[in-house]
Image (cartoon, rainbow, N blue to C red; front, side, top):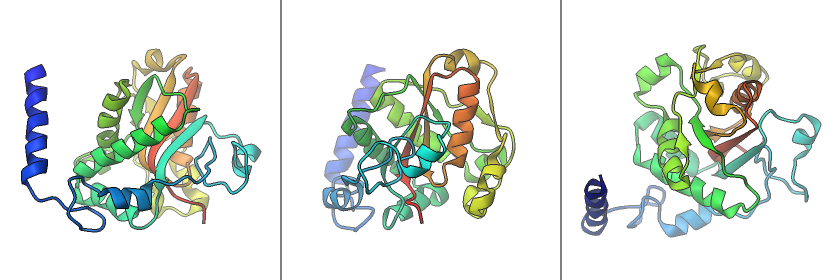
Length: 243
């Protein structure tokens, strides 16, 4: 296993040094998937975010007005960046063009955001947001799982891909009017049979590519809390700013 890992590292190094590579955003030559200037311009930002839902905040404080008025089922959210141009194009390329190397880069950016937040409590285990069987079959992969795999490795915690199951084939939240999104995912998830022993008393981290309304993540968090989880945190690459 150690030799196999060493050879993979050597192959990656050789590929980086011998094959041409261009930034996925600006197209300039870069040894990385996204060049450092684009990471600085589009990912690295110091904007204040609500610790619960990761929405941007203008005023000092840990919680936004919405989370103060209606406490979400989840306890915290870490978002690496906003879901906005040009990064939204990368998310769509991962989802609909199977640009799977982007999942590893998303995980790297998310890991850096987690490490930069000294107040964040790292979860005990990770779970990707599950896809329904129909969408998984048509797409061929779950983008949340592809992000969660490298993220679990860098965090050094266990990944449980089937911790939660999508038992209802819901419509994509992006195709549902905002007023109907909570209803669309209501009771859409269930725990896998051994999951209750894994989540009881634990801090569960739920991984996804984008958080928009938060209803999907809220539904999963409520499920884990009912099953005995002590804490649930969302780990998402991008957060859609409120309109």
